[in-house]
Amino acid sequence: MIKKTNGGKMRALTAEQIQDNYKQLLNTVQLYITGDRKDKVLKMYNELEDRISIAPASAKEHYHNAMIGGYIDHILRVVDLSLKVREMWEQNGGKVDFTDEELVFSALHHDLGKVGDLKHDYYIPQDNEWRRKNMGEIFTHNPKCEYMSVTDRAFYLLQHYNIPVSKKEFIGIRLTDGMYEEANKSYLMSYKAEFQVRSSLPHILHQADMMASRIEGELTKDSIEKEETEVYERIQNIQQAVGNKEKIKDENPKITKDLFEELFGEKR
Ligand SMILES: [Fe+2]
Image (tube, rainbow, N blue to C red):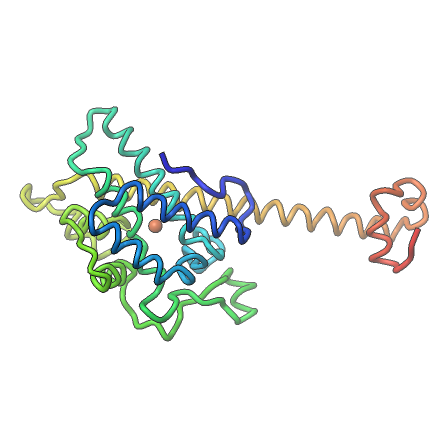
């Protein structure tokens, strides 16, 4: 079973976590991808390492994993949840008509287009302070990266590295966003029996991706609330300190030491 990373509430990854996540990504490939394809996937990751390691999973604070290293963190979570949903599916009588390799390969690459193209990152830091502050745009789309949907760019990158994709994987990656992607409607809303999606793989991937995105969004929200509480408490401390300088100095020497130094530039 793949270990979930970044399980805490901290929404910024350390350099070590980013490195560990990249290693875990490679381990996942080693564990689940077979044959020549494994070497080709490893070659692709090796060439994209610098960019793939730091890529975020989305652009806005209130989406999911809009942080340095957020892409791999999201991918590892989707792989982990895909395997768990597959297990639950099977335990409840659902048909598993695909291999673990097909499931993990699809989970690994469903968002590959977010890494960018062969030269350019898809996401770049938002340098407009107003948009960062008021719209929560941590990143923005790189104008140098020619437009393709994220899924199309995923397939473009896979074919560039000569990585074959099975039909089930193709449809799985294509439909991971479920009905959130307008273009998936013709696949998922067919009323002709022969045109309906034949494998459960896309549905399992979609559930895993939704769960991962939702959990990542909640982790971010928790971390923002925690930060806001800390800022509020700090403001209260400052107000209290300004109003009761001498009193606090005498009563709370430990708590206010740093605060007094910062506020009044004096040593106790
Ligand atoms: Fe995703």
